[in-house]
Amino acid sequence: MAHTQFLVPLDGSLVAEAALTPAVEFARGPGAKLGLPVTAIVETARYRHADLIVMASHGRSGVSRLVLGSGAESVLRATAVPILLIRPDSAPLDPPFTPVPSAQEVAHV
Image (tube, rainbow, N blue to C red):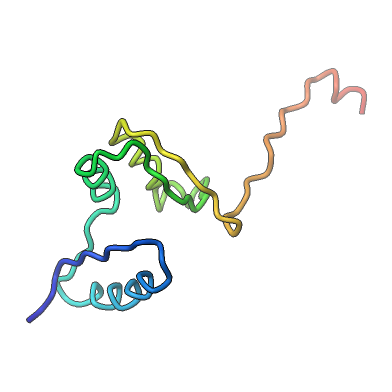
């Protein structure tokens, strides 16, 4: 029997996360598909009457964000439930915003 749709429930434990790798391998099979995570997050929050959604963010910006999208932003736009974004220590940091110097500042250089 070929499996084509997958649900991988996670409880935050390493044991539960061990199911992810085999699930992804199965999902690479012919005709298999994974559900849209944004839809699943929003529907689950609605079904469970969640009053806060907590998500980790990859911290992508620029072209990679345009190409890969922002799951957190998509969830934000699809629900009225507040969202707490967590930046993992390994997520890249953007350089701080540097304002353009004024003509007066440039002239004194």
